[in-house]
Image (cartoon, helix red, strand yellow):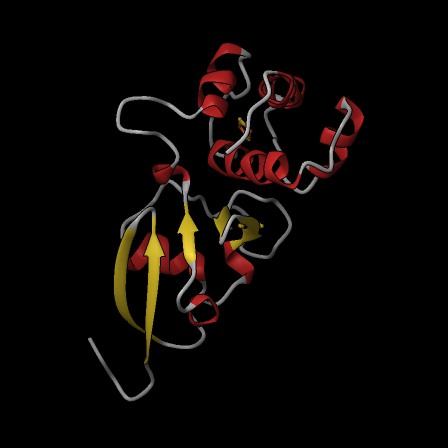
Length: 161
Ligand code: FES
Ligand code: FES
């Protein structure tokens, strides 16, 4: 519903354009989850400390809990729902399954979106660098070794977006 407090915002999310009326204080995370029912992106801390809410904005990984929806007017947003090609999983999604890289799965959408951004950045060349540059994505289940194994497997497989 449009009220005097809202602003028109257009977001392209996973290839679909959405014309929204957003209050300026609403986070991108709440836009995704509460306005658009894209609940694959998780809310952990809601304070920029866990990485569960990581999505891609114009190809760069961002924390959607620390980003206002109105800040991303006109941006291309990719969430975990947008990574697979129909029934064909993204290489990182397949690698997470193959390497046992999750237990509860709550951190997993953020881990995978962060890993997509990491590989596109092409800054991490070693296992230690992958670990360091993924350190903003916390896993309470202790699946970290599998997560790094999965990212390294895709990296060493020559993945390019
Ligand atoms: S929910 Fe965004 S960093 Fe934790
Ligand atoms: S798989 Fe449970 S928090 Fe990471």
